[in-house]
Structures are given as structure tokens and as C-alpha cells.
Image (cartoon, rainbow, N blue to C red):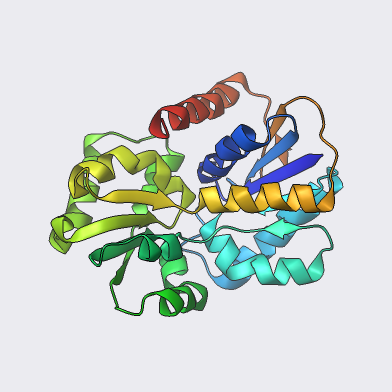
Length: 258
């Protein structure tokens, strides 16, 4: 079985990392649309076009399942893609429902890209589960830029997080929902601001559980051994420095999720 993980950039490695843990004997294609990243500040028509181009490419590579590991692309393009293509197309969304269900009545903060925050899909999700109006939404676009640059723990990152979050009175929140897969790389710094008693969660676990269920339901055959190919906007990544960067990020996620 060949599984495609598609994102605008490196954020989708969060989903790839968890997918490999759950389905370790499959062939994976990781597709980062780096030429057009970040998606979260672009308009909907552009993102739909980029997403369709990515899925066309991945189908051409013989993929059996496409996982959209981008909250912005899921909110804007997933329904359109499912109508256009026959293969299973899975998405990711902010883990608002589990945050509310497991909450203790304190406030919940969702941080995401500007377009994800503006999209009706997220607001419908919040309206469905947030009967006590505990959920706040916050745009944090620069975190995507920092992540794409491989800048995770610099003074600039720390300063940006404090500038954006300190004024929200972090001590009043019991959960922070990461509404962009890029944001997982900043979990530790976010925990420092909100305190260790504040849960920091994302939607990748639910997406991978959906992936496993889809594989079982469809009866796809295992490839038998793990392989991963990396593509950036349709171009196979062969540069050793880039491949080392991707591997370093996966190892970093091992430590973050430990």
C-alpha cells in the first residue's frame, strides 16, 4: 500500500511520524508544497488549485490513500477533492471536540493560521461542541514561517510567542489546541507559557486513527517494509542536506511526543 501525506510544508511530518508508528510496514510519499507555502495567508482559490495539483501528482505516483496533513487545505479543499477523486482522501482538523469533552470547565485556546481561523468549517466545529462558550481562537501565522526555516527555539520565536500569548492571560486556559501541524514543533515553548497543567493537543492522532481504520476497511495489502520518499512541489528530494533535515525533524518529533 502506498500512502501519501500532503502538506504545504514540514508541518505534515507530524502526521507522517504518527502514521509510521501505527503502520510501520507501508510505503509513504511525503509531499510538501514548499513552492507555495505558507497556505494560511493565501486565498481559497489558490489553495484549492494547489491541492488539486498535489493530488493529481500523488495519484500519478500510484498512491492508494491521500492524507491532507494541513488544517488550512482540509478546511478549504477537502470536500472538493473528495467529490473529484475516487481514492480515499483524509483530512485533519483542530482537536476542539476532544479538548471540550475532556475539559474541566476552564477556557480553551485554538491557535491556527489566519485562513483556518476565518473558515466556516472551524466555526461550525466550535459551535457544535462549545455550548458553554469556552473556546477562543487566535491567529499565529509567523509560527509557520519559523517552522519552515527550521527555527524552533530562538529568541525571536520566544519573543513572538510571548508577544502574542501573554496578553491572553495564559493561566486561565486548561488546554491549547494546535490548529496547524507546523505548530507541533513549538509544543515545549507553548507549555512554558501556559504551564505544565495546561494540555497542548493537536489533531494528528485522530487523523492517523482514521487512516488506520480506512486501511482496515478497504483491505489494502501491506507493503511489507517501510519506505519514505520526499517530494517538494512535485520534485523528488535527493539532496542529502534536505533529507537529513527531514530526518532530524522526525527525530525531534520523537522527543516532543515522548
